[in-house]
Image 1 (cartoon, rainbow, N blue to C red):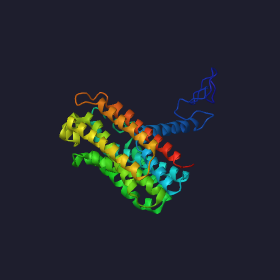
Image 2: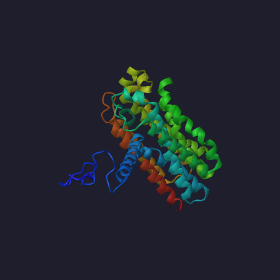
Image 3: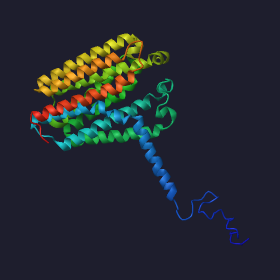
Image 4: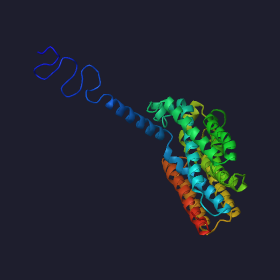
Length: 334
């Protein structure tokens, strides 16, 4: 045994081991703070990924295509050229506002979600994402949205607080009205209208028509989605169209909403001088809506996710593709 803490067999009595690790809880020798920093970085990245799952960032596909339709149509009518900087800012504003809205929704509804078997596995309920992380993510998203609006034009900045209001009111809607989907539709209609205003800096009724179409479309498919929670909502006193009027009536209301959506999209095409490719895209959308409503029945909601995610994702992308092609044929240039 040596007096300096080292033993002749290579082991040590001062807490250090010959492999560089320690038995006294201190950092390993030769890499002070290294592994701790790596762990913190990995944990930070994990929190970001968990937050993005919390807000289902991939569902931005539902609203973004219609914002692009509004923006690109306005650009075509203005000078027939794509304004890439404005398009980038519109994308940042859309995604950040939706992220803020989803985070606020999850924070406000976390106790309701905990009592619903379908939503009890959400990240805030299970603790995968902390409330603090969700609040920080919501705050950052709100700052990005307001900053994007400020960079677009004075009208967008002035109206940006109004765009935030329905995003916060919507999750509370199920506590005071049987029609929270109407609030959701209002919130979603803001996207195309805001995108048009971002390009022109002035009010447009053409944009309002497109915004109404999108709001009624999203409200209509959320009616389908809400049918899954009828039993839980009634048990908890959560208010919704299906909980108040039943699944059958709700599905009829959803069909009516989507029929009205097609009519409004046709109106938008007419007032903006859309060409044949737009109308072809609208025909595809109408067929997709018919298919969506064949998937769900009052007594069989097993295919709701296919109707909600697959069909509605397809609707947005298909119509945007046809609208972009139509605008290009009519002279829109990059």
